[in-house]
Length: 381
Image (tube, rainbow, N blue to C red):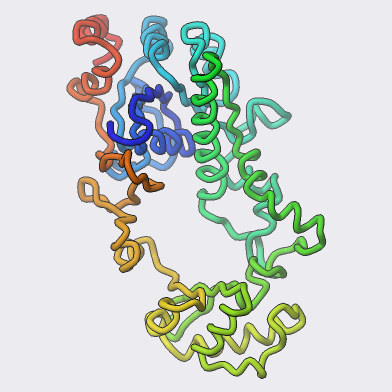
């Protein structure tokens, strides 16, 4: 695999959501990832045809029965060669399977063992089920997202599962891999979505303590409370995003929209925000989204059209950057971030578990004779 993580080998124990996303991040950047799936299909997350399960791109999988000691031994033999293991089970599950941290580190003392959960490995809620929304709720983040006098808004599962979960686990794994190369010792990464989501909100802890940020939705500068950081409806029912926080950018917005600043109160006067928002909102309703975009987007007014998922890949800026790619007919985001020298290869689509693909999955780990032996024993198909 090309990319900055070329040479890093990862064992992924099949799971849902943030675990596969973390594995995809590593694979996108060039790591060799083998996904260990179940022989008996289990419903994991939202079901869809394999080609559309884009988080599974860039790696091959094998199917084994982890209740079979021989299969567990095979996974441990993979672990012996790995730099990283990623798992997303509830606390204690891998220990019961014989694939817990102690089992794996005994076979490979340099292993980085990445654990992805919502509540974490410890604490009163650690043994219970939960989902992205619950984890955000506990950290105070969900309470802060939404409009005044409205219920909290649901930020998809991007903020908890993928930002607070996958990205933090990937960062922890890479930090531990670097440290292991210095110390010669691996370690366990306890990746908890509640920890990551809370950490993402660090700046707000400081602003609340300083009295700059008020608890309660839709009353602050960047939570839809102000007229210069919000989304406005246009004449065609579509929206634009408006975010000129700095005064010189706000002045540019008003100039281009032909709004006399004298008709508005001071930008940072909270008592003026409701009236100013009405004036700006009424003005946006006089033209369509695309008409406003043509005027405002190529300026310092800090305005961009609110695009749908299907519209986004067609935007000229994203097209010019190649932000989206097509893989086997499915449009999806390209690997990120960008690298000047060790450029990752274009991703390949999620692959079904077949005898040929099992060979592809194992060729970086075992000899052809070893793979034939595993097949003869019925451990892999």
